[in-house]
Length: 175
Image (cartoon, rainbow, N blue to C red; front, side):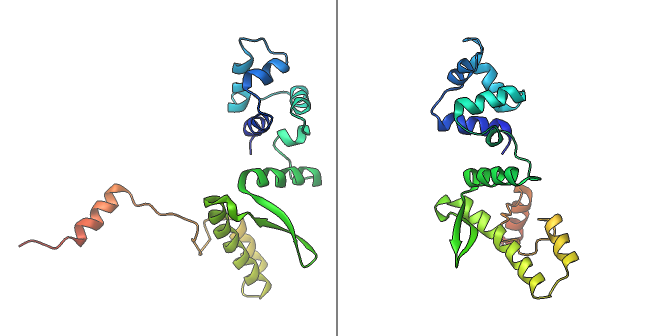
């Protein structure tokens, strides 16, 4: 989730308007909502000191607002938290092991993510069973979805032109 969406998410979580947050940050009354709208639309990027102040006002870590860097454990945790907010990813325990799962109540997000995760799990199982090499597995991951043969998650909506051609071919010929 990009920084603008994170700002909006946490602002809404606190029940604040753009104007209210802008004024608390010290922006002039007439421009406070415009300035916040610019940050949320990402036409402007807030400097680190402003992010820290926003985080304080929104009662979150500055890392929760900024785009997390997955190169650190803490950055990875904030990435997972963002995935929980966006896609309903949940943490749980199965047989004494910590696991991540999808939340079924997330509706179409659940269905789409389930199909994608299932395709990934199939490839991981093929690697584990020796059906594919680690190189082939990596190719699948790094070129995803190009090499995904399950195609379960894709919706194919034909163009109007293709749809018309199909219908034309299905019509009985008149003599």
